[in-house]
Image (cartoon, rainbow, N blue to C red; front, side):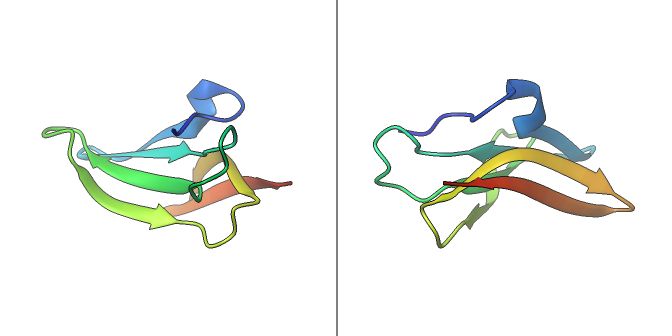
Amino acid sequence: MFFIEGNEKDAFKVIDENTLALAVADNVNQKENSKVMLINTDSLKVEKEITFNEKSFIPLQIQQIDNRTFVLIYIE
């Protein structure tokens, strides 16, 4: 089961007019790796899913600076 870690508003980021990024983590059961999903805002389908290789990486915030997207993480 996935949850948003930290402040909910920081886990969402509008990337462009058609794409929303969402950062989620399984910090309760810790069976699944954390991930960032790129969601199409028209269809609400996941267009791309980026999974972290380390279970200890917990995404907290998504930022966009100069057309680059960064995910700030917490490491347990």
